[in-house]
Amino acid sequence: MIVAVMVLPFLGGWFGIPDKYLWLAMLYCTLLPTMGAATPVGVLRALDRFDLISWQGTTYPIARAVLAGIAFAAGAPFEIYVGIWFITDLGGDIYFWFLAWRELRRRGLLKGIRPTLRPTTLPGAWRFAIHVNLTSSLITAWGPIARLVVGGLLGPSAAALFRVASSLADSAQKPADFLSKAFYPEVVRMDLSTKHPWKLMLRSAAFSGMVASAAVLLLLVGGKSLVSLIFGDEFLGAYPVLMVLIIAPVIGIFSFPLPSMLYALDRPDAPLKARLIGTIVYFGLIAPLCWNFGIMGAAVAFVLAYASMGIVLALQVRAEYRRVRSKA
Image (cartoon, rainbow, N blue to C red; front, side):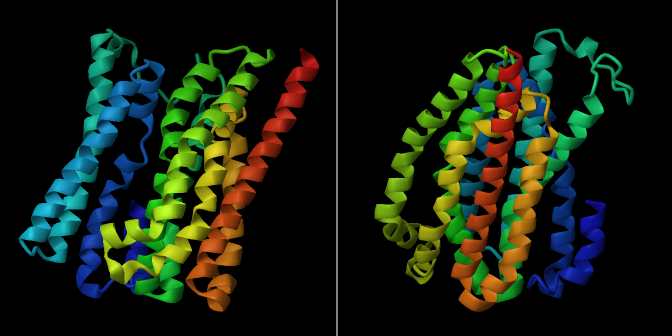
């Protein structure tokens, strides 16, 4: 948060943020500590309260949609929309913390929580926490940074088209995102030297692929109509970009169990390495592809980065499988 506030005055213009809105962007950065915190999610997953996670995941988008609709009908200025996003983001995060605290209190587990910088009862806790937090930070920043870079290289209109296409493409991966929240708590309880967790991994990926295939097919067949219906005819230029970006969620759908498997195998460094490689590939390709192919080049760079990340994850899981099975 502090770094973002410090660099915004210098980078805001490059990303197309007008000087009159710079204070809004700096204020929005105060959300970073709550947006990046995964503790309440971990608590609820560990306690098998996926219903509460799902409930929280639907309340703040609905509230945002209602408030944005009211603002649109009232002809509200841009600052009001930023305020709506700020309030709903902060409210959703605080609600998550409340749900986790309430569940811990209900089970009498609050008494056992003692903050410490020396977790002697959890060997490797610092290593795990650092790797997981770095990975989650990269995941959180992946989409927004991609759109900002596109805007910086090609202008605000290209960033808007890329945002529309990426929003629709991301919707196809939602089934895998929901399943991943339930997959890790299950697989971490299993004996990884047996075949059961590996079969669960393959079956989960196959099931997720079947469920999400319907969403992908819907976007392929009716993507142009959806863009026109939701965003308006002026955004139809996002449809060709969507046809390229749809490859990324397809990769994500079939590879969603891989990070959880690596965490369960006590390899928290592996997903971070994969994400870093994907980030390096993206930033290495984005500028030349944008300069030569415009917004389609940006979409190709994103897909290639996602594919490289998936390949690295698969290779690491394969190596771990051979290591574990050789000792069985």
